[in-house]
Amino acid sequence: MAAILLSVSCSHTSKPSRSSSPLVLISSLKPASKPSSISWASSISDISISVNSLAGISFPHTDNRQIGVVQAAWTRRSRGEAAKKPNRKSWKQRTDMYMRPFLLNVFFSKRFIHAKVMHRGTSKVVSVASTNAKDLRNTLPSLTDYDACRTIGQLIAERSKEADVFAMAFEPKKNERIEGKLGIVLDTIKENGIIFV
Image (cartoon, rainbow, N blue to C red; front, side, top):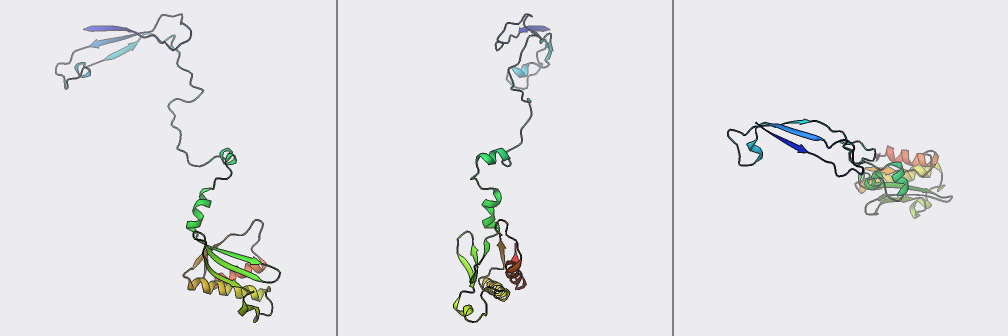
């Protein structure tokens, strides 16, 4: 039976330790009867290691981090990071033009009502209706009342169906309520078979 005595010293410590260097005793080294391969490690069958002393060993500074903890992958920006880069678009802003490609835009002025459906990706106008058009301007008694809103909603729905658009989105502006004339236009479009997504 052979016994090997190894001395391990820590060179990364700044102060020399008072205690003697730790001793690690490797015992019970028995040569293998039949090595399975030609390597040196395969010629040793059993290794038992006993540590006599670990006093005096100081580990490198870990910056108060937990060792062995795997951090989760990056999933989303934190609020602080979003505040540092305010111009970066969110996931919804980047994908919304593909998930909801057709957008309804309604404009009310003092004199007329204008509505259009636009494709976001190509910026092409799919359908347009306005009470300022020649055919409506001469036939409608008022260009801004509730009947004009119903007419605009009906025309937008019919022209969108002709262009094979059966679903669209409407995004109200900040502090804009869906009521009154705007509500009448949207309800009329829904009643004529258009789905809002």
